[in-house]
Every structure is written in structure tokens, then in C-alpha cells.
Image 1 (spheres, rainbow, N blue to C red):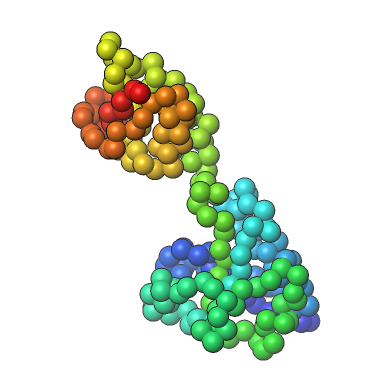
Image 2: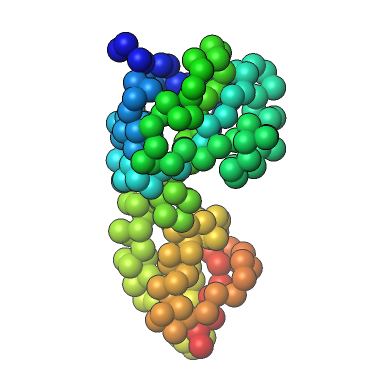
Length: 197
């Protein structure tokens, strides 16, 4: 590639950065949108459920050394050229951001996927499909008095799955009694009391 450059990229939050960096070879004459497509392709299957347009790209220039994780943890992703952070706009050419050759052994692009709430993991997507059945099991486990039922989700009942089931239960007229663990007798998981309205 005549006007090609190598960009070291990192998905935000992946650590240790020195082990998680991946390199994309792209021409400076290409648009940021093309770079997004290349990053999405390079990050398969993790980015299968994300459209390239949903990715936010940030230009940085950080040495890939033992201190980079600490620097990244404190880095605020907002347009601030004086602090060395610049949002890459999809329609602009890469040459407008990378006028010089990117420094070797540096991080050049931070990839920010949509928030976790928008981008569930593969396991969370599988669990989402199970949530309605879980709600039916819970509602079917009502005690004789009808005032208490068990939730048979694992101890991490406030995880994404827990929130999904919580929402479905609330729609069924069930309120969440905040995290009071009472026993561990069902399905090898902690049981949280729920109370019926």
C-alpha cells in the first residue's frame, strides 16, 4: 500500500493493553468510515452484533509500555487536541488526522463500542432468550399464601440477566425485594425473595 500506514488499535477497557492491541493496515487516503469497517472485520466474532457505524474511534498517541494501562484508566475520551485525544469523524479522510507517520510502538486508535447495555455478550444474548422461561418458573413457584415467590437466578441477581428478569417480573405485577438472600436450595443458585404486589 503506497500511502499505507499501520495503526495500533485497542478496544476500550481491554487489558493488559500491550497484549490486546491489534494492528490495522490502511491507506491514509481512506475515510474513517472505512477504518471502522476494517476494525469491525478484524474484531470478529466479538463485533458480529455491532454495526461499524456504532463504533467511536479516538486518535491518541500513547507509548505501549508498562504504564499504558494506568494512563488509559485515567484517560477521558472527549475531543481535546491539547490533551492528545481527538474523535475521528466518519466522513473525514485519515490523512486529515494522521499527517505524520504514526509513532512506532504506540497506541494510535481507541475503539469505543456501544455501551454494554446496547451490546450484550454472547452469553447475555443466550440468557435473554431464557428470561421469559425463567419468569414462568418463578411465577409458577408461588407459595400457598401467594405472598412470596422464589427467584432462581444466580447470586449475581443484579446482572444484566437479573435486570431483564426483574423487568419481566415487574410487568407481571411482582416487585423486587432488594437482594435479601434466604437459602441456596434451588438449582444450585442463591434464592432471592420476591414479594407479590
